Image 1 (cartoon, rainbow, N blue to C red):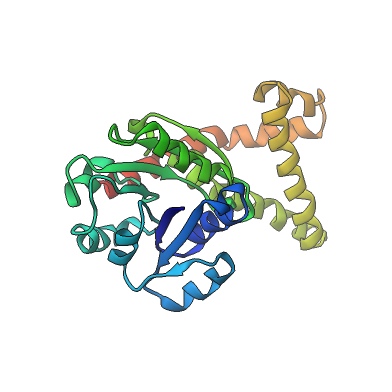
Image 2: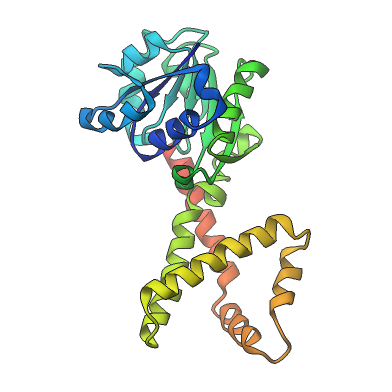
Length: 266
């Protein structure tokens, strides 16, 4: 049995544990968890997770330790667990902007660290996760971590030096998409279309459009052309989006997201 522990049992930690519990890995993984807000651990009963009394206890009991916390909480947690982390502990960090070198400097030299940028759709088993690893992590250890995130959706392995840049693409992008969606729903309400109807139809359009991107074999430009009849309604709308410099705004959004990730890493 492989002992896998979570320091932090909020939405992201819960989503990952749910993915493990609902997958074929459940038979070989024993879940452990600690959260400073003790009542949150009660919902982990459905996973038969072992409730720990401290972050250090999680590390003592587990070979794989997930830091499912916010970057602002990291230093306090690393200070607490530094004495219990060994060279064999695999630390899986979802903290945006934090490097494996930084975690090693706070725990043990050459620490085994897997850097992860997941997103909240993991809660529905539809997550999109980017991963990278330090050189000290073995292929077998990394494969297990990748399999865990594969149980919650899709994952991709990327270069370690791109973990900050990827945040805008998959980590923060759900919030950007929700803001975009809200504008369409607000328009629908303004012209007398019910909010529930608008949300259902627009959400399904998002799901279908995403599937077209991944499964149609066509480029994004080709997909835009498929929807756009010459002189039609779509062209009229696209012209306004281009006048409003949508592409440039998205680029600035991504740059701001990445800039903040670098600030958090200092």
